[in-house]
Image (tube, rainbow, N blue to C red; front, side):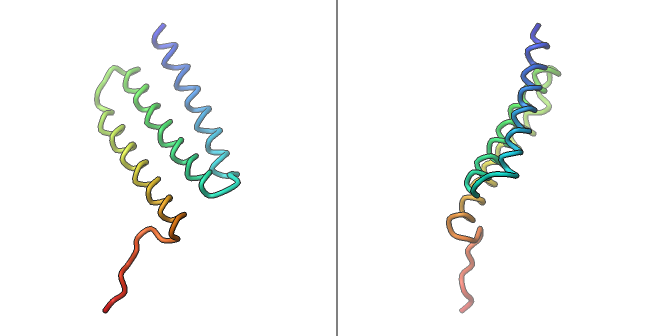
Length: 94
């Protein structure tokens, strides 16, 4: 019974990722696309966590952490790019 619930939630997460991917491609504005990419990262994180529970292992915990960190850094970088036009500001050489 638990395996059926986990498999159905994985299927729903895959469906959610596909629908969010449509928003990334056809988003009306850049902030909408960034938000959709962040949602894909969260869905991937949840999918790996459900997969780890399904396999009854803790080997995927590092992958979950890595996806979370990369998703956060990517969202911050995209937000800085939208706000300022550059990700890394460079000081002019003296």
